[in-house]
Length: 383
View (cartoon, rainbow, N blue to C red):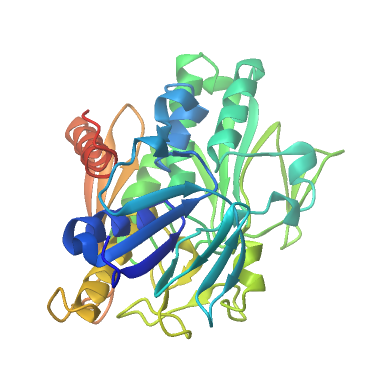
């Protein structure tokens, strides 16, 4: 390692941290000393949580150990970040301290089920791998009734996921012969499935209607009543349930809030073109960053690719970077082992646009190839 190598510390090894460390390793070589820190020992693609929830895959199936990372000039440390000083670009973990020339915060968003009264007592979150596994374990005892899937906050990862959960749960109940004695109802504050596109939203809602999945949009959950087993809505209505599956309120990790990096909205403000925060040399990507795009793994990966271009240019190893364009493909589970593709361009034009490719088995294969490519790129794993 060169004595003049740039010290780059990346906090968080999700989509953003993995893509950024991979790019910088490949293109900077010994010009950089890269430290990648995450509290977990494994990575899980977010979309696999739904496979775990309905029992088509196990947690062991979907976990990718960070021990398999073997990128030149990248050191992975399984540690919990307990302090961040963005002015000094100094990080404290439960295993040591780090000083950085470039500090990247990619710690994601924490789930806060306790912020919705009654959720912990009588509902179930399915938005973490362990939460999804807990739902899987209770589904065999569910013999039919009213299922409510509730989105409990305005900002949450992967906006299509609640709809995917409804489609996959529908299939699960059909396989068990319980669909005719069950209802599935989705409650969300979102105005429609894909807010930027009436056409794509209409296609999703039509598929829900075909399956008898009902929905309440622009609707906020106030609390769950454990005694009455009803969801009490902000508008005064009540929705009874036998099984409540919740997308918890999302918040920035406390260590990020305590560092002074966040703004009044609770997230880290960044320059959309460079992903730099108000602190020089400190950047943020992924769910924790406030960019005018949804939170999603593919968004975090795209932001990381843009940030890699920014850093390569600033370190004299690349051309002037283009700003983050927000172009993504979302692979949306739509039941019957099919995937619909939603191609979105958020930022490169005067207004966001989206196109929808109807669900198909070819779409499912495209999603498998998407995951396979990243397993190989980030972990060196085939298949």
